[in-house]
Length: 574
Image 1 (cartoon, rainbow, N blue to C red):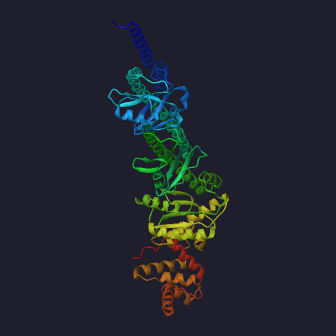
Image 2 (image 1 turned 180 degrees about the vertical axis):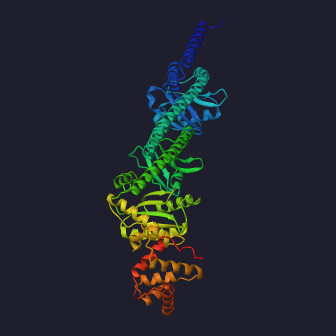
Image 3 (image 1 turned 60 degrees about the vertical axis):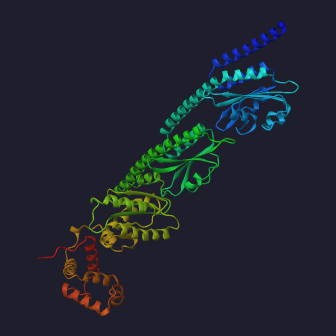
């Protein structure tokens, strides 16, 4: 005959278990919020089993982390994490089997001691895997109790039922969390995109990108770098927070090889532009999804930097154009304002350069545009602050000199000679000037020097305005205004004679006059014997009817310079 008391006890136990499971079902059906649901499971399991502590671990890759715990251990939530290769909890994950220890928890070889959990206070433990629909362990429910209380088989059975009911809800909640995070990320990136689109200038854009990246990634700090023109070094554009110490970097490799940083290159099309470097907050690493977010932000930044650079280049081009148009028109005040917009400090010494095709070349030629671009780039690299207009007409450049001005101006002239010779242009450099009021004069000197240079430098070179002597007084005399006198006739005769006979009588005469009729010095400069020079001078007198002892040699010298400026010789007669 059956024992009615035992039947009554079994019925009460079954009823209690069913009531607990109904509570679990109602809980997991009521919300997709993972945190509140897991906290509710901890509460239900604690009440149903009279345990001293309940923990729910969730698996993330190769790691298990406490995601819910009894209130006394609330500080362990999200703080206790270890490998699935460690501890009894890791064993349950690996083997997907429950573990039941009635006593000797501390002595079990599968245990690992976690001070925060005060496991030395516990005697018994039961750990049940939470299995996904596919049979993989996605979590573990763990109960602890102090001696002399022990868990029975009924507790293990109840916990396994709870785990089976909770597994689907956890998967759904995790999927919901992933989608919500994805929506939050997309919303955040959309908001960042709008902010970036409204940023004016590289500085504002970089600050927006670093601040937005730090917020979206939960990073400790973010820095944005731009490649230098040569592409071998980087320069810091912005960092967030602003008072954070940016990574010390001189080259892209410094950032890419830093193991403490998540560094994403900024690439527009196939062109590398810079680097987004982010450091995680303390005691954490970037997850895969955060790395994807960083890549999306880097792409956004690359596109935005390209757009801003185009706008800034166009704005700069227009400002430079306005500067030189104002100088040509003689409007020094407006030109000075434009120079200020270009950050050219006119209180420092400066020069203006002007370049035109050498010899008989013309700025309308098909290849001039490419040549002007190369010359403009070469001039821009000659100083830390320049404003360059590279065509479509002459190349013009305002160059602020580094101190000391005299040595820098001499070096610039020497560099310019090499640039002119390399690219086949006549480069004219003004004198060194200071102050906005000198701008128009400085520009005029450069244009005049370039005009004179076309007559003097042959296939290409450079001349400085200060060394042009009498040419400075003749440059504005038009060909039709040249005096028609015997000096011009004599020069034209020598030009024609040299062209037909392939001689250099005009060069000989010009050198003789510039050396103040010194036969010895002139012969030395021309690399001829003094007697050879005397023979040439006699031939010049015979051809022209001039007397190099009695005629007005100053007028003769000026006539030669005018012929040079106007790029004669004249066509041969008959």
